[in-house]
Amino acid sequence: MRTNCKSLDVKEPIKSWYGRRSEKGRSLLVFLPMGRNQVKINQQIYRDKVLIPGLIPWARHTFGSDRWTFQQDSAPSHRAIGTQNWLKANVPVLIDRDMWPLSSPNLNPRDSRRWKVEALKASLTREWNCLSDDVFRAACAWFRKRLKLVVKAKGGFIPSD
Image: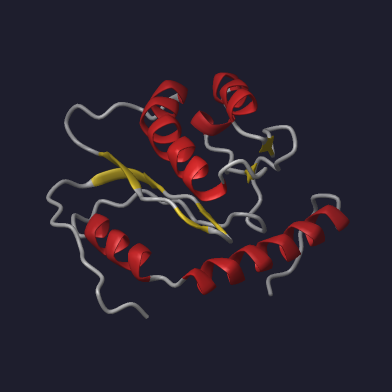
């Protein structure tokens, strides 16, 4: 465990947060605030506030010219045709909306629930920064195993480990 971890002083609640991880490392977290003027996270907001400023710079830094695969859950902004087209044009390998089950608790690497706790943002950032790379390598290995089991079950239910 890292001992030099710092947390952020955060005052506003959040609507959603996004982070990318791989065997090679993790991205910074991207937070989308919740407030009086909150808007639905549509495909344009997802691309402009999450993918373009977060995913692409992180992927270039992490993978360089190596090929990498992008996968996401089936939230409406993720499965929107505009988002899928943008991803097909900007990532080397995409597990697209037609390849991903609409609702698969077996393959959700991160349970994405909406939180209304002010301290969550700071806690997530602190913990995210404190996780060792070994944790992410193990999670990626576990996920590959689960993915193979789901393919073997033709998308059907598989028991938890």
